[in-house]
Image 1 (cartoon, rainbow, N blue to C red):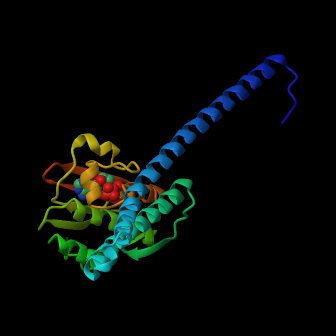
Image 2 (cartoon, protein in one colour; image 1 turned 90 degrees about the horizontal axis):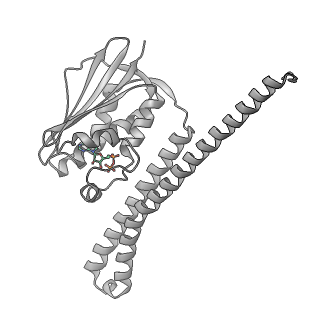
Image 3 (tube, rainbow, N blue to C red; image 1 turned 120 degrees about the horizontal axis):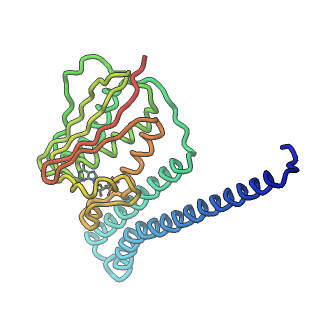
Length: 261
Ligand code: ADP
């Protein structure tokens, strides 16, 4: 950098330096707030299942251990709690990596139809418990090849279909469809006829830990991170995600992907 001799330029540079520093401090402050809020949310999310597990263990230690049936029941419940903790920690790990930008995409060509089918296979049992039918337009004769990170898109589909089951109605339907768009894009839609979402909640839905009905959603499990993860993954692909929803009618989550040449 050339040495400045002229006073006016020097003053200007000092001003600019001060402004930059101020901006930097503001950014750091925002980040610090964000970090505090995040940590607060994390400990809150972990507390509930931890206390549940502790509750079962304490009851067992308190004498419930003697009865084989009760012992098994409580150990199973404690195990469910631990499973939930593992699930939350995995989601936290994923969101942290995504937010730090630590997760590079492994973009490859794959058939999105095959991927939807494999996600359905994995979630069939979960859907059956609520008598929900997973449907996929069987008119697709030929593969639809896209360019994306297959594992991450599998996660997106999984999170959306799991939500459609969790917030779907008993004996309801989840439908996945794929449509060609112009400019070498496809749009993947996940539609349910479940409880739907009030308009006021929609803008905040993709925030970490945001839930429409705190108690109701918690009963359904989950970490409140599912949609935040979905959004990050889609944005990392430079693609778009949309929601359409109506209370008591259902919801549709859709996202775009690039078609393989
Ligand atoms: P959670 O672990 O609570 O499911 P998500 O980030 O996946 O967290 O979803 C955030 C919230 O959005 C949920 O708690 C629920 O209130 C709402 N939601 C998500 N998907 C649906 C859906 N298909 N139908 C109705 N509400 C939904």
